[in-house]
Image (cartoon, helix red, strand yellow):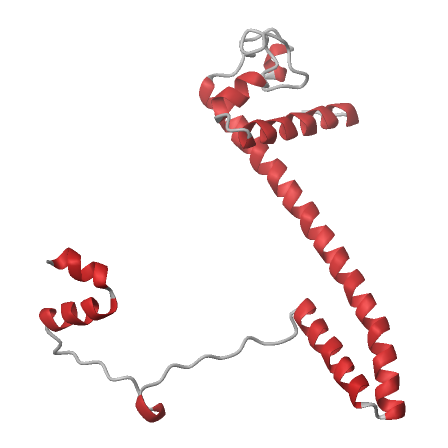
Length: 183
């Protein structure tokens, strides 16, 4: 199959965008497929949607796709369009992160010079705040480790011989709704 032309790719991108918009508006995949079908006999508006679903069949005079194929095509288009939007958004986030990092560089240079040259405590604090902001922006800090322990830092004691009644009583102490359900 030959590669689509630029105009065909634009028409397919438009179909995908229309499919996403229709799905966001609450239309089910079959309704979307029929609305964006190339064959006027399938199209709910009775028009030939440019490069619509089944365009390759319609252009050859063959019957359009069945309902199952329409649904699969719509779902594939919506998935691809959303993946494309997500990739574009990620690129935007990365560009913005780089811009913010460059801004922090400029601010840090001023604070650092004052901190080192004059020994200004306020400039030192400002430089540290900028460093902290950069670490959060770029994810440089490792997550804090959380450890749960028992009395005086020892192990948590678990009693294996706890009966069902004792367990129900413990649950009732912490969840009054569960206690009402048991009764």
